[in-house]
Amino acid sequence: LEELAAQTLIISPSHDTKISWSLLEWLHNTPPGGVILLGGNIGKQTSELRAFLRTLGYHSRGTPLFIAIDHEGGTVNRLRHIAPPLANASELGRSSVADARQQFSTAASFLSSLGINMNFAPIMEPLLPENQEFLRYRAFHSDPDIVYEMGSTMISAMLEYGVLPVAKHFPGSGNGDPHYTLPLIQQPINSPMDKLVRAFTLGINNSTMPALMAAHVSVPSLDRDYPASISQAVLSGFLREQSGYQGLIITDDI
Image (cartoon, rainbow, N blue to C red; front, side, top):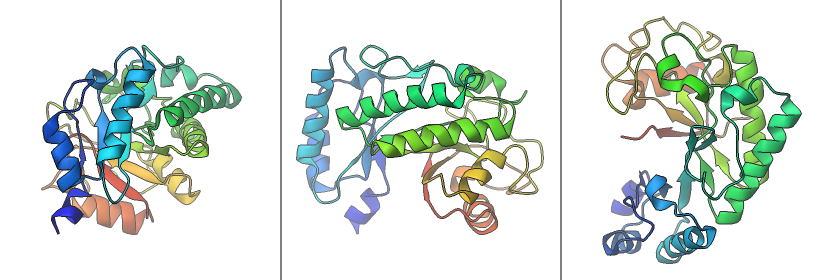
C-alpha cells in the first residue's frame, strides 16, 4: 500500500547536482512515481546531468521513474546552460507551425538524449488580462485556437521522441502566482468550449493530450469550496465527465 501511495508522488531531489543518501534510501525502499529536476539540479555539463540521471535510474526499483522537467523555453528553461535555445512561447505563437515544430523537435530530441521522459509543457491557456502578470511571455497567444495549434505541435514533437508532455494549467492560472497565493478565476466557466479552456478541450477531442496539469486556483463557477487541484467537481465532474478527458492528471507544485 505504501508503494502504491508513493507512485502518486513526483518529488524534488533537493536543489543540488548530487543525490542525497536520504533520497537514495527512499528510491530503494518506497520509490515515488517520479522526480522533477529544478534549476539547482542542472550543472553546466551534460555529462554531470547524465550521471545524476543514471544514479536515479539505477537506484529506483519496480516501475521506472518519470524524470520530469519544466522545459517551456524562453524564461522557463532549466537547461539554458547546456541545451539548444528554445524561444519564448509568445514568440513561437507569432511564428509558423513549421518553424515552431523544428524548435520543439530539437528540444524533444535533447531531452530524450538525456533520459528525461516527462516535460511540464506546453501551456494551453490563452493570454488574458488577469493572467498576464503570471504568464507574460509563457503563453502562445490570446486566441485559444492558436494556442491549441502551437500546443498540439509541441505535444506531437515531444511524443515523437518519447517524452510525455503535460499540458497546463487547467482550467487556468487566474489572477496570481499559485506558488504564493490562491489565485481566482472570476469569469464563469460554463462549457468546455469557453475561451479559457477551449484549447484543452480541442486537445481532448482530438486525442492529442495524454497528460494535464491541474492548477492551484479557485474557480467559484465550478467549485465554491476547493481549489481546482483537489476538486472533485473540477477534475471528475467538469474535466473527466463533461469534457471527456481520460488521460493522466498531475497537480502543479504543492
